[in-house]
Image 1 (cartoon, rainbow, N blue to C red):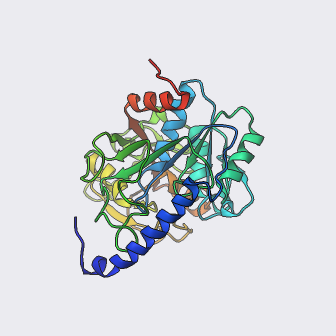
Image 2 (image 1 turned 180 degrees about the horizontal axis):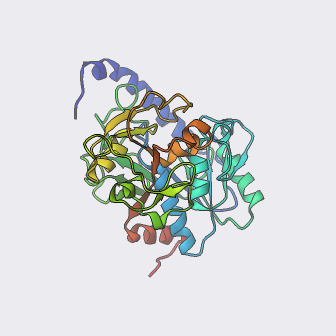
Image 3 (image 1 turned 90 degrees about the horizontal axis):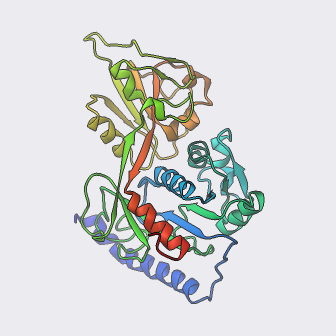
Length: 348
């Protein structure tokens, strides 16, 4: 683990941060601070490593796994970056505006095809969701691991190839809570298992979708264009790219405004693409000028970014922009274990 001078200087603050976090959690565990239980089991999918670890595609996978088992799941989220972070719960659909409810909830609503609601108080949002959709019999909280005001039945913590970083808490390290924090399941997003994680951690891989797997005509796999297969751009118009540079090979820019852009770039590298990179801040606010000075033949973006770009006419009508959706590949045995715990008895 790399622990530089800056981290060592900040380490005393990490001790204070950790003490306050432990005290807060203890107050909830001992009942001195109230934690509300709602009228359905709650599964929290979160992380202790700051930044994106792949929660959104895992939530979509989990919704499908529960639906296949006969459950009717719903998803709640804070609605980061939008008015969904206000105390007033809001219901989300795939046509909701990302600036009002957040980009990830809109993506989940469209991809998972289940009820979704957002708001800053997750217990209140869960109650709202169950009231609006009484058929929902299990609530998935997208993030909210440290939101102890909502009682939970299952906790799933995601990591990626960065593992636990230097192993220290904020601000000396990347962790919100200690790496050994208790949870029901640990999931690692990536092809290798980093050091410092439990031996029983489960593996998740994100793979680009094939065209026939896509959920609607506005999100098609850009990788298929490079093998002369049909696809659609942000405008929903099908066809092949026909775009090549002077050498006969298209010049490509990959842009990502997600928590860990390097993961998106690695996915494209693994597919054999050569491209330039544009790493943008998480929840980046796209404008008509974002790609105005880009000279690439193809611009590849993530599904999460496409949720916002499709509302900007200059981007939606830019024939260079293509979306690379990914799906989570997870061992079915993890779904069985989650169902076993959810039902309170073995599935076999």
